[in-house]
Length: 425
Image 1 (cartoon, rainbow, N blue to C red):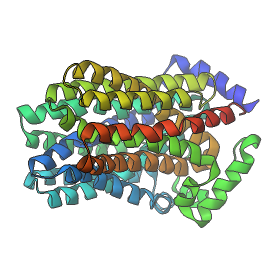
Image 2 (image 1 turned 90 degrees about the horizontal axis):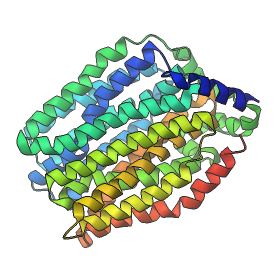
Image 3 (image 1 turned 60 degrees about the horizontal axis):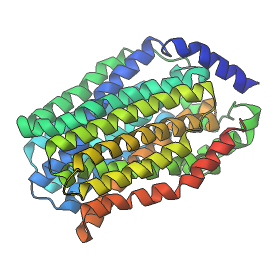
């Protein structure tokens, strides 16, 4: 009964955007921070290559950023118990933005990796606090659409700036991109301070939520108790390995690995900055569309139904992009089509995995779910970038990119089983 009532509210809310002033400020702040993160995914590897780094060094630039991102996320349970989500978001925007100016001083690999490591700490804080604030600010019946709106704020900078930054480096140089990205993240700080305390964000809640029983629906009581107990003993690493979050976590990290390889190496593999920019633009645009459509669909039905189609699309699209990078003719057309297929599927996977996680942990586990989701995404980006770089040393970039489609395809049964389980709620 609780589920059907929630869906009814979600349908009624479908006529207007969810949330209020706070949610609008969150979306604006998210645009700023991801306007820093997105262009660096491709520009920093190019900057490293410009400094003489090998393929493994190029991959390490993104890998180190994601490594420190995941490292700080392992500390998020401690931070969430002591600071508000707004404070974490503002601090993260500062730590992400200020070090970006540091790239201006040198393209030597050691320096680039140092700057990237510091930026990763800031991004980890921003990513967890932002997605957790979505759950805090918006009622459960509108959460699928809210996650979709948040996905748009995350995806727009990637759609516009990831390809534009590659082109800009050719026209205006690297310095212009680094300065603009740094200022964009810093602009998010005053927006965060303008937010008022959400209905569920008092600091005391974060101090006590790890020891509080979850107040989810009766159908989720066993899973909720499991999450609550683990939060007080072995932390987020154990939560990620628990049975309630394992499936969505696995689906997200495998697809994110492919994305990490694409964003770091596609401009190098294609060789043509214009073609690479178009492909990245299409990929991110379709990812936004997929995430939004999945959010609307999950509010009207149940979460998780698009996981299997999304995973299949990711595998097919990744294989297509890999083949395109090895072709001598017709590269652009195939790469664009494959990027569209991958982007649409990845957007659906992003949205459905987060909504499924929020539902499974209950209202007092939003910080835990957000941390687990962001760990999967960020670790996947870093692992994918490093892995493709290492594989390319002993093979070719097309074959290295193709290898990332294999684990995605292997998770298809897991996606189907997750869908079947969600139908029971």
